Amino acid sequence: MHNSPVLITDFSNLAAQKWRIVNDDVMGGASTSQFQINEEGNAVFLGEVSFENNGGFASVKNDESLNLVGFKSVQLRVKGDGKRYSFRLKPQSKEKLPNYWFEARFDSVQNQWIEVVIPIGKFRPTYRGRTPDPAPTPDWSTVHQFGFLISNRQGGHSGWRSTGFALIVRD
Image 1 (cartoon, rainbow, N blue to C red):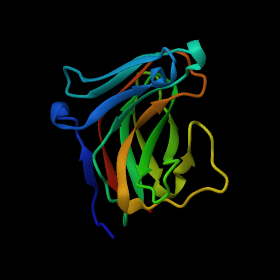
Image 2 (image 1 turned 60 degrees about the vertical axis):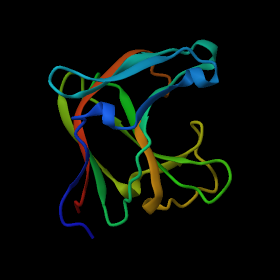
Image 3 (image 1 turned 120 degrees about the vertical axis):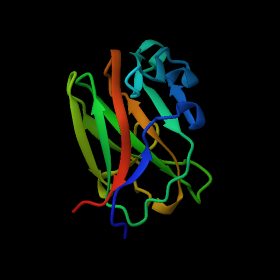
Image 4 (image 1 turned 180 degrees about the vertical axis):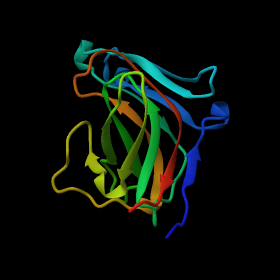
């Protein structure tokens, strides 16, 4: 058990981190997004979600490993656009395919900083927007990717800012 929060990232050196954009264009869609640091030192994820060519999602993910064993929640500090986003974790899979994401959705508030606390037990498996049945059990010691996604038919311009996020212990 961990006794204090562990900072995952504060985005202070984005170039040294392993963030990358993955939008629906990997499947023929037309959504666009970017991830950058603004003048205040906050990470900014913004873009436009398009439904052209059966599209509808934009995401940014990090390819760094996390061991979540012993942690009870993830805490995010975000300033958004009033839309719903997903924070996603991808544990290694012993199965060949599919390799499921585990996601928790949160609503941002238009132009207001909020703290979002997501209990680890609230993350649900998803594969290409669908919940698998039966649901796999995650191995929280082997998370090898994490990130953010906007989808669910929320078209148009979108974006949020973050000062960082942390793993925390909170009852």
